[in-house]
Length: 126
Image (cartoon, rainbow, N blue to C red):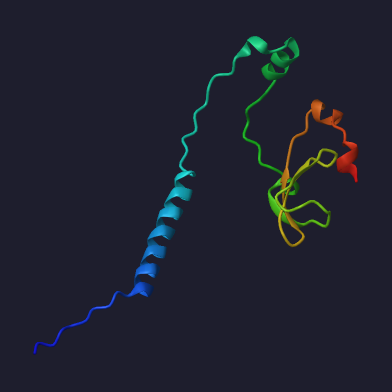
């Protein structure tokens, strides 16, 4: 009698191999979103008001370093907003992106006249 070799299918190996392939595919798809080309279009100036044109004519495009206080930093944040929230502190010129565990990424921002007219709605003030 011939000895018959019995081959069994190794499900553990097949599943781990499938997981690796799906993981690589998922990582590739997620990273492909990072490769967006940036295109800039000329601004349509027909909607500019005279004040807009005046302010833009005075802009100097000198490369100025950002002061240390307004550079991006991870800071302690002890308010009650949920992680993923974006909070604008227009009085102090900061934007906070709230993280988990009492931390936030703080960005220095420029606040224009329109931002000074913001108000807090009664629901969000609670």
